[in-house]
Length: 106
Ligand SMILES: [Zn+2]
Image (cartoon, rainbow, N blue to C red):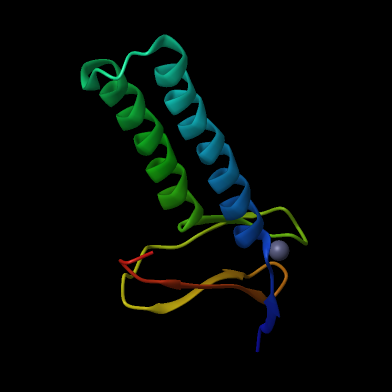
């Protein structure tokens, strides 16, 4: 039987990226305020790019996880069924529970 261990690694990167994208959003708004350029045509590509990158990394985080013990890359398929976000490392015989659930609303 594999050991189930809790990890907050996903929560940490989730929080970090939230802060980084918050800063990116602040830069976009700050630039608009400084240049007094509120025309949507200049902001939309930047906002789309930031959102696209954020979404890409979020999707990646839900499918890839580095085992904290042996640094092996663990992968899983997204289920979108509210199941717990867990990654199993066969090498360490450990199931890593990230404390998130795999739901579409996340
Ligand atoms: Zn491992």
